[in-house]
Length: 396
Ligand code: MEV
Image (cartoon, rainbow, N blue to C red):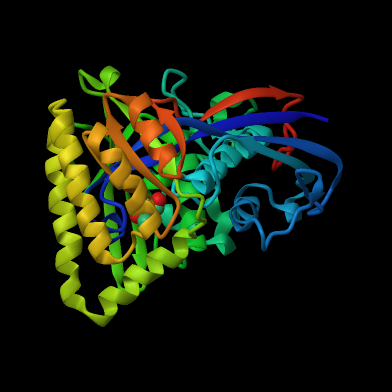
């Protein structure tokens, strides 16, 4: 029996949460804290999975259930799995624990399953995938569990020519794409790709309504929502000079606040009063200014933009007294502070040159703190043994 372990970081958002769901720019940073997912194949085939030693309940773990439908189809003979999840990202706190779990699980399942590739006619040409999900192909399939098997693509001659089974079959784009698809499902059809892409790629991720010339373009994602199609252009940003001297102090209120409820709350407020879209646009303008300051390495201005962003989030109704209390405590020793993630509880972040002082102030105000630097690693496969755990199709 083989096994695979993969891990992915959590994230915090410098600017633009909620507004990014409506296509406004935003920036998120991978944090040091990670989720580890390990999968081990059981000898029988079937859907009797175990999660942390207990019978797996798809209703309690919709993200994992949705990945199983897309990558580990029992009707194609996939064996049952025992999954273990560990890590130091507090759940339902705005730090991307569910996105980190999804992208790490996706990498583990893909490694466990291997991948068919199409042989190119010219040996010098790189081979292309014969199965799986990517922005280069039809991304819509990833969002539709009923069409998972059609994620298969034939090669030029209609053949799958060769099969690989090591961690090189993992593609960060695929993990981010499936991560987004399952987040969208869990958030009632409304989710930006920000969390999944940041947890998958690590570092600093910028989402914009245009392709930015001063950041490294990754790909474009689209999602049909109830009120229209949204498109995001994703980029990664190299940590600017000076980022070694600043820290992110995360303060946890300890209040669990599901993202889906906060996202639905904002959607309802906009439906009731469409004029409030101006607030969303203002968050976009603040984010754009913050992004420019970040690219210039002007962290004092980044901090100011974060604090302005917080005022707008408070106006939008997604802050709460406990978050405001921690933000107030952090402010004197930091460059800027705001809630991070969906709000309504969960965490705030402070950008600071004095992490110890800021952290102590937040703790004195009743928050639990974590400290993180900029530019942390994204998704990775940490170990594997006895591959493949399963393969879809015959290996010659
Ligand atoms: C949650 O971490 C961020 C939100 O903007 C939702 C999303 O982007 O899907 C609130």
